[in-house]
Length: 566
Image 1 (tube, helix red, strand yellow):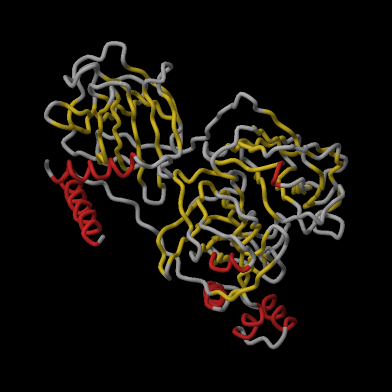
Image 2 (spheres, one colour):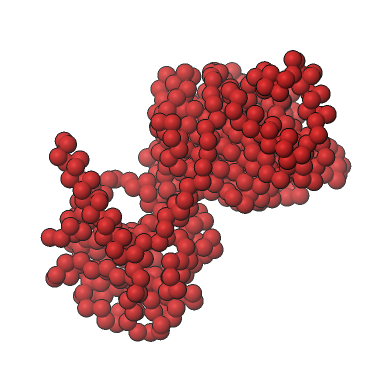
């Protein structure tokens, strides 16, 4: 047995024991008979996509991407397990004939097995195209093609072929359990005030369930698309026992309800959770009240508009493996944070240090993050979430290099990412205020700014937020101010240019931060923190066949080293 085959055998044994592969969260049957199943996951930061193709055959299997759904111009891989061992090649098709082997092999085989009349082929490639015979994987639906034979002779497949259109990078699963039901939480005939910005909150009870249910899909129900900017649903602590309705962030609006359960932003659509997780409601979860928050953006100050917007929740009694939850991270939304005018690219930071979570929770654990929603207002241009462990950056958890205020939605990460207790998450927002002549303050209004990222994760914890804010006393001292009034005068009277903007940005980054962690019952821990340096993570380069073999040999050595150490 060659070294590559040994590595693949070891990896196959390791992966076959796993009940759930967090690297392959999505799946589709490509044929009506369910003989061909594709599972996949991706990492847009690294620029790679992973596939696992399972076909009910002992012969060759083929999979690829086609411009029009046929063979012509298709980018294809063919593999199988024959009498002489496994085979796997990157190919392209010029027409209805046997695909030609590419001179440059850009797909990386991870394992390939055949057992009990079933062939499983797991492989990886770059999201971008690596040569003229590869097709790039885009954010649009793509035509996936498949074919397979009854033997390992790669000959005509007859009717064992098909095409299915799937959006691989923007995939949103859609399942309908047999006992699926739904309930709505909306405003009811609310007259929107003639204010440019208005937040309205409604505290209401969800339907009562004797046994726990899992919410698996959330749909927006928007009656005034030109007014509704975003929706949030918070779970209230047990101290909230009565329904109410009022302007948000007043004494009557349920400010203590701060555990995020659902979020929707302008431009977004429905959100469906992965098959292994659901948002819990009812049963032993408790009979809680919920606060629906609607942000109305009414720049024309239109009067007399009536709104019934809200959210629809689909749920099932068929419980999934994990309870899911939502954690708010980023820069705390509180007075005292300013973005200068005339800035081409101004950076702000919000730090979540998960080492502080046990201070508010008796039972805490790692987070398996599967989706995120990023949120800024009109000046936001980019949002990145850095992931740090042991004082070093290990990844970008998520990034949007072209943030669009008019298009905000929860997006799947492509694979489940583990945030261990003790890791740090840094939310970095980039703003452009070149067309503004005065300071932009952090706040609720659309003309003010936010820097937030909502993390969808499992298993759920009774945790509402993990955010930070610059130490304003340290900031004032660093800028030479003796009190708040002096600091405000300095900020308003400053001549803002590239030099002064950069100095202020660097000061904000180097001073100490206040890291704020809150649980579902508003127990809050205040802790010190510092902003680490955030760097870009380079995409994985296209790999040649030689490089793939070298990687396999390295993997073998690592496996043997671990074995000998044990």
